[in-house]
Length: 232
Image 1 (cartoon, one colour):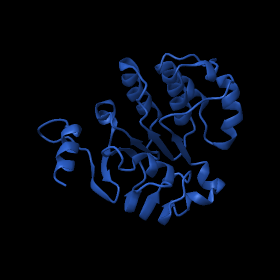
Image 2: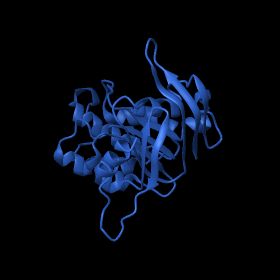
Image 3: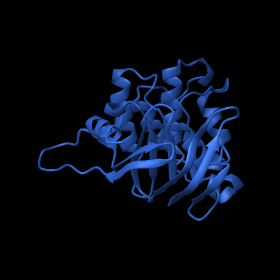
């Protein structure tokens, strides 16, 4: 379980991005994290994973503080940022160097996900386009089999076909004991794979609920977001 209690975070010379913000996420399922620009979605992911230190409040993941960087917790967390660079190495060498940090790393799952994306397993990671790098890194992230996986705008930079493949890859890598939190503006890219939705602003959760189809059919997540924000 992820518990965020009254956290605050302010970048130097800027206003508070997160202000007395609280959130609880139960284990298991795919969560969509939505919010207007500047509401702190990306910052929240970095704070939860311990890459940024909240300036007030508390964060607990399964009873542990991510800022302390305990090995027991680090092996259960993985973040796919919106933008990143990759080293000038073959994918196989990267996997060999990184997989010891993730005891349940599944190389077959990674191969299956790469195949879903029409990617070869012998690529040089530095020489890929941004979209290809994102495909490879998403495959690696799912293959780590961490209990908690965080993705920040994972479909940015993917073409139309790759966005469809992303949904298929995500389903392939999901399991009952895995919790995936996806921050996104691209609602249509992910709405069919989400189990829960969280709509946030910098000091409050406006809506948090499971996504369950009713007699009227699938939920229109984009309209849900618009209605929720406009009621504020």
